[in-house]
Length: 304
Ligand SMILES: [Zn+2]
Image 1 (cartoon, rainbow, N blue to C red):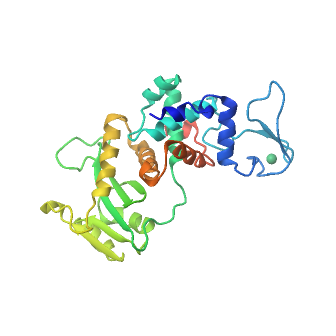
Image 2 (image 1 turned 90 degrees about the vertical axis):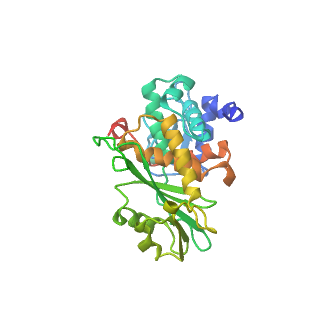
Image 3 (image 1 turned 180 degrees about the vertical axis):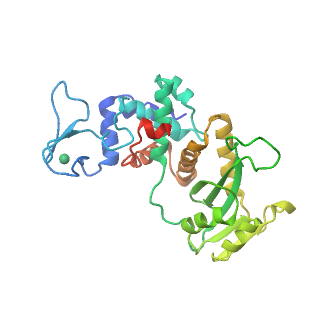
């Protein structure tokens, strides 16, 4: 655990917490979430005024940095949000709601709600294709958990299928997919991987056709115990899955199907912003904050 980050002022002092969050999402000064105005905005003063309150003199409405973000309409102190973010950013395999509840002193329900909102902030939107010329992109699928109502049996038919796209030396994107038919996988690969990339997969027949669309396609025959041949391997994607599965089994034991994509977003976020890529715990938390805007998540949408 990153004690030094935890002792920093924004995680201890409410005013400092607001100032830090504002600096991350309003680097050029406050923006009114009601009318989009940037001029004639003043901090509200007075003893009864909430910390971080501003008034927009264009639309005459008050606001704080929480409005229009995943923090909206929560009464949780900002410093506690930041503490939760640091914990979730610094723990490779994630943090359970139970752990957040005990560490932060909030109710279990609040902890659960916060962690889903933070996952929502971690979700990347409007993504460019991954990879590119000279880049190796691994595509691999893995089986996880159990589809509701399906009896447990041998094989993988009762499990959820997750497709991982991982750029060597770069980021990851994972998807909860219907199955391993080409129709399940090809549209996602087409949409997310640049054609100039070298595509690395196992021998799954579903990859053969799509592989032709890329500058190069290498496969390894896992069924014949071939795992590496030159630069042909999917070890990077397999490492991703190993962290994901250890986290999901050890920390998040009860993950329903409807929330699986949120957990995938969380593991993608940490993988794509990992220390090896030069991102430390503090910077990772700053990057989550960049994702809080425009992602209001109410109790209702969390429960659905
Ligand atoms: Zn306004």
